[in-house]
Structures are given as structure tokens and as C-alpha cells.
Amino acid sequence: MRPSPSHCPIAMNSPFLDTALEAARAAADVIRRYYQNNLQVTIKADKTPVTDADVETEKVIRGIISSRFPSHGFYGEETGQSAMDAEYLWLVDPIDGTKAFVREYPMFSTQIALMHRGRLIVGVSSAPVYGELAWAEIGKGAWLNDKPIKVSEIDSVEAGAISGGNLKTLASGPRWDRYGKLVARAHRIRGYGDFLHYHLLAAGKIDVVIESDVNILDVAACSVIVEAAGGKFTDLDGRALTLETTSVLAANGKLHSTALSALA
Image (cartoon, rainbow, N blue to C red; front, side, top):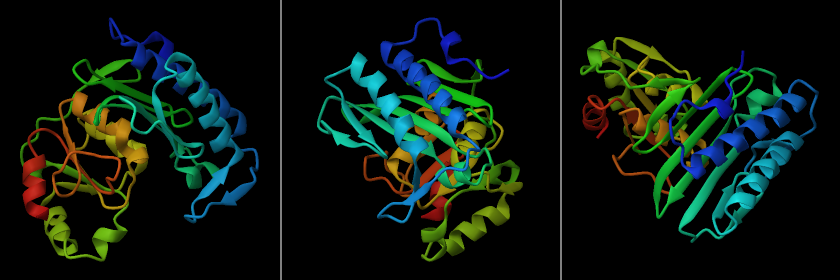
């Protein structure tokens, strides 16, 4: 049975989180309709693929958000930007993992986040075919498939699990050797990627996530989920996320500083 965002167990959601969950539910309906239906794929200027499903999904999300909060800004992967200097700014990637979507395996998700004056405060990460829905609001905890989640308490790299995602820039730069030394110390190494390793991190099942090639729409929602679950989420230099963020160092509360020092 798939998770239902309409039955969120948080006692009092903000209208922001309720809206993000409603939008995620509507997006999932669109995605399921298109999935495994031999879609036409167009290559964008940045050489990434886009389908009718991406565009329609974002339009549905944008319509719901705009009807509830017409004065809010919107930054979408497919339909563009509006009111980027608004006090509240929604960040949306309708299908994060379009390549997986097109090749018909379930490692894709819808990412919906809300930023207030530069701080990310609400995040919903919905992977309808994989069967996971995670959401969070800063100060109110994080949830995965209707269950509250927390990051792990592991405090040593030697006992921890590290997941690496997109690492192309890291591999060609001076940190690659440091990354190698860090993962050589770890108890377990995997490359779960996309939404999945952030869900696993927030749920206490892995302990560190490292990526060097992302954009803010890929990770904004998951950053809220990880932080609300007790973790820490920065770029590879330890800086807070901004609209220009391109890398990630996310970890439980006890290993972030260790990993940051190892990569410095």
C-alpha cells in the first residue's frame, strides 16, 4: 500500500507543509499515468533530458502552490522562475531522475521545498514508484512513510556507512585522494544516489552522503528532511545551502565535522 500524504501523522502541519504534500500527491498521479508509456524525450540546452511528464507534473505542482500562496516566488526545473526575491520561495524538481524515469526504473522522485528568507524550512521528497514518501518541517521532525525518523548515533567513520552520489567534479579535483582515504576508513561504502541515500541518512540507515555535482533543486527538500531528523547538511566546504549550491556533505550529527575535516 503506497504512503498517503493526506494522512500525515504530524499533529499540526503548517499550511506550507500541507500544500507541499497535496502537490506531491497530485504529482504522483501524473507520474504514474506517464510511467512506462514510451515517452518522447527532448534534450535541453544543458544536455539533460525532459519529457512531457516533467513539464505536466511541474505545472500541476505550480498550480496548487500558486492557488494557495499567490505572492510566493517559484523556482522550477521546467517552468522557470518568478518572484525570486519574494519572502517565500518554492523550489521544485518535478522528476528528479528523468534518465531513470525514461529507462523505466524507479530511482526518481518529486522534490518540493520551501525557502523562507534564504532558509529552507519545508521539504517533501516523493518517490511514488519506488514507494517512499519523506517529508519534514524544521522544528517539527521528519517522517518517512508515516513513521517518524531520526539519523543514526554512529560517531566514527570506521563504524559508519558512506554513500557517494554524483562525484565527477570531485574525481577530477584535489579532493579525490582525500575522499579515497575517507572511504577506505568506512565500515561500508555504497552509491545509493538521488533521493534514496538522503532518505536512508535521515532514517539512520547510513551515516554520510557526499556529492560534488548537484543543483539546489536536487537537494533542497532532502536537506530539510535530513536536518529535521537531526542531521547536518552543507556543501563540501561546510557552508549552508544557497540557490548556487553545487555540492553536498550530509551526515548524522556526529560525523559531519569528521567528514568535513577529512575532505578539507
